[in-house]
Length: 171
Image (cartoon, rainbow, N blue to C red):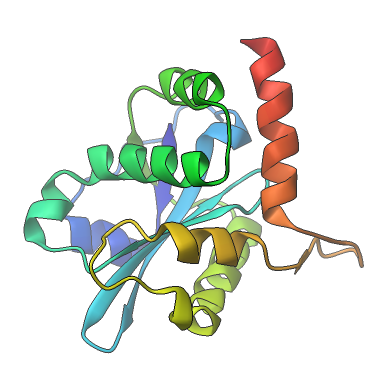
């Protein structure tokens, strides 16, 4: 799985980015950024294919050391909460068994990530301060209407369902 991080996030995680040799499947690629709201930090992941967002909250130093396992766990928990079949989740995670952290390359995808980050401010009532993986906030952000830049609009969660359905047919 490819995690394309902003410079801010790479510095925060103290991760050295890998040079991106080849373009991965956009469904298995995510852009990521770190936000600070008040004294808490949010890690926001945005899928490159469908703009589905996953939010992590209040990460501490020990969580940053295990960020790769935390991201995989977050994807699994949020997909389970979206009622995605367990075998599809396992297939998705097995296809993306190792995480590769790189720099962002595409300005359009960074702009989409920034829009997902902006939506966090509107979903503060879904914040669970006792959990790192923000399942309800992730579901809410991903169910908000977004534009595709050409006058059409869609819901990222519905497109993610369709993409995972096509993906499961390939398994």
